[in-house]
Image (cartoon, rainbow, N blue to C red; front, top):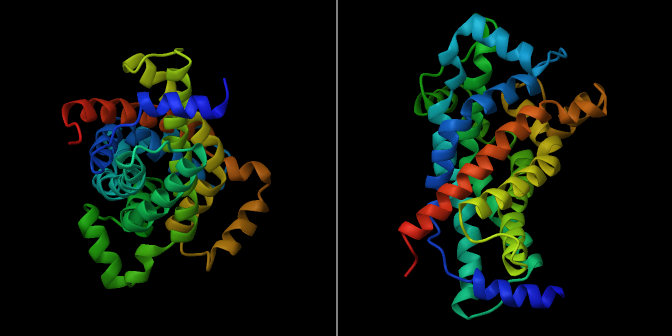
Length: 291
């Protein structure tokens, strides 16, 4: 079966218009479950020692208590409601233009639209990402060095007042690059994998099928985004880097594996996040079909 035949059959199976704003709601629902994993990932990426996942979890639990695993949740939810709404929204809006005309959407177009959506989402949600990273990193640094933001609004206003608005866009270059790759992995890969598996009748358009497709997409997204994610996290958490190049060079001095610090928790976090996001989103699309 050739690519054109797959595209043609997939268009019949998966060619409906979608409501552009449901992605943010699905992302926010997923992050309620995955936020502790994101916090562990940030701790691993910003440490200069070589503590493993178990040691980081144990240290944080004993030192700060179980509730500390939800530090920065307000920022994380805000990020999903801005970042994910924009990235899914732009992707769906661009795709809907072709669906309205009854056109088949090629994989290359999906990659392009997902990349554009990712960049738009990262730019819109960067302020929440900066606050989120700082709130998550607070529990592992000395009390006198902590930012101590009460919530995402407090963090945003404090940064504007004490450091300037430009700091809310710190790391935006790395974040846009990561988000483009992330959206390609999580969204374009998901749609393409789903189309191929539905066309070949390997899975059905149901919850088990959505699970298989989203698991594969989450794994692919983790692999292609991890190096950029490490750089983005370090730029946002610390002010010691004057630009992205300096951060890359400093990380490279720690060895090539430094770019994959936190890979395991990143995969453990991203896989369930991708799975939950898509299973929630597919359900929302059934409940709120596009007219």
